[in-house]
Image (cartoon, rainbow, N blue to C red):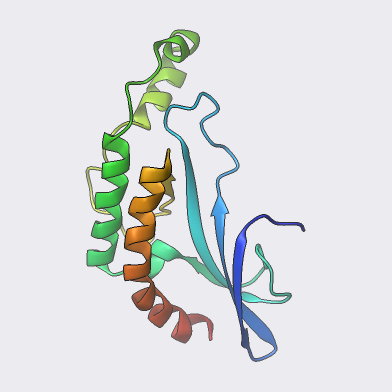
Length: 150
């Protein structure tokens, strides 16, 4: 499987601990709310993105405080969204419009450890915010990866 993902690997016995950054396969085709990415950790072979085996996503390995920091950046990204494009809203039926507009709503409740959190971004400023936070959280995440995946 060819991949454009950023991949990191480390031997773990006969397998590897593999981490990669994956962008969503379904970004906003209208350009309003942007796209999303995750960071995934798995153990398996061969050492490549998408390797099959036990694994965790970045936010599943955070404590409550770390997830709150993620929620704060996520909400900052959402607050910076411009108004939804009227031309798009006119094209959508009621249900689709509600789903589309939901992308602009703040995350009001704390993320749970099992919440599947994708890091949202629309532009370079959003990525800068994530790349400011993620390295701060990474040591704790790696500390959680080692006992779980080797």
